[in-house]
Image 1: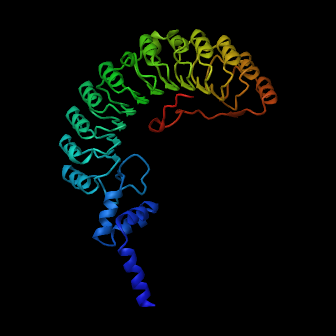
Image 2: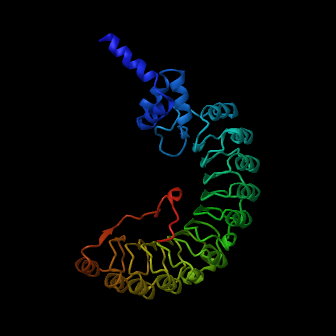
Image 3: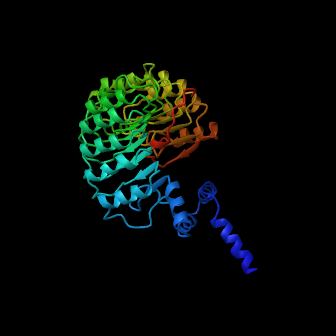
Length: 395
């Protein structure tokens, strides 16, 4: 029996590399994958060559089988070099939270990063425009990059746009030093762009997206200093399906959002206008009429929407499934009735207690629309994940 067991082990050890690769890729348990490489040097090499994704424990994503089992608080250039030299076929790499990583470390992407498709550098505070230019040089096939809270400027964005023409998903949230100039370079240079996050980028007005590709379906511009002409630029590509402009500074926007309903955003499905306190009925009417495919609309804290606006939503939003009206001061029983009698596809109404809506009006809504779930919770974020968006021309 002992000899038979040894013969079996020997047979497995002598399997060709392609069979071992198949076995390794079939393993989904983190422990099994790590144990595989401990068998012998040959199997360790198989493990190294077949690893496609890597992130560190301090990364903000979910830590799973693709993570290293060591702390990365002291990850530096030398460590990154060793990692990239060992795992030469990575397609996904997250250095998010590695705050001590310097620009010079990214020079190792040139010999080892050519297969990278996704790179996350969130909160890598010491990465500058020079580091981003190194990313462009080393990762020409990059499709997704996350630069949340990075200290980059328009110069870095221009370098990225010139080198990584296949970019589809870009996260620039809280990049306070970028402006419309960098955004213009990105939108004009990367014509396959599908999703852009520019939330809390105070130097962006939106005009940098004028003439963007029709593939751009997702824009998160929450708490930006957008201007009316910027809104027109944002929807100019004609392919937008998700738009978040919550917390918009409304000094110039009493009717400035009418541009969303001018025909270029006819494919829009999810719209977040939360805390756009000065948006008026004129904008609501234009959007309700011009965006017939809307499925979810967040109007929480939009105090200036009155009966005319709610009536237009009821009359025109035939595909609306979720509506957020939390703390809307001018939603009264007439507005609620308009939503009740229209919006036949509505399934969820997010609505907290409202002094202008009587108990009778609320009970009548529940009676006539028993299929609609009323939730008191206030949802801060809606829509799909930015990095999982795919452009589909048919929808």
